[in-house]
Length: 222
Image (cartoon, rainbow, N blue to C red):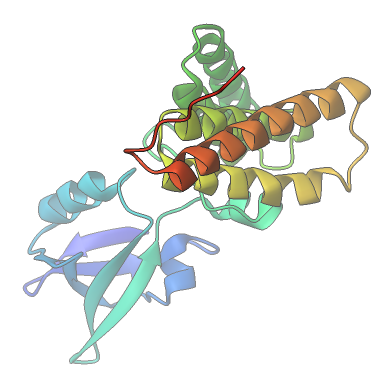
């Protein structure tokens, strides 16, 4: 999207085909006056506000003046390539993009492998999602991302984060529904099966702890 300053706010000069802005209904000559409950009066303020939202919210309300009347639209900030390919919503790092998709894929997968080898699974997951943002149909990368979702789910559940753990498990399940329609290797299937078993075990243990309550002690008699 190309914008320019205007007396009222920020004027949209053009909108890229298939972009979040176009899908939200923004049009050339719309005047942006508010983003996510904060007014914008210049391109600098527009850039600062947009930057502050990246990686923190999935969508933002944008108020524009169109033909002299205010109109509010919702701009989604998640990755449409991943949403279309795998039906999950992901907030990619939009600030590090590559003109060559393959270069972006290689960069992010290399970073993801490094994070995973250091047991930094949350960071590894984000890196693999960024790789898919560049090349969403790369099946081996999608398998790694799905396996990492299951690992992250297990970690979150083990740490008592039920909401986060179940959310990651749900995303992994959605991805697996599509992955299992593809010709996966035995190694890929085994990795997904093992990670899924670990996540489900953590879910059962989490549910058991919740059922017992915080003040209940389990006593085993021999």
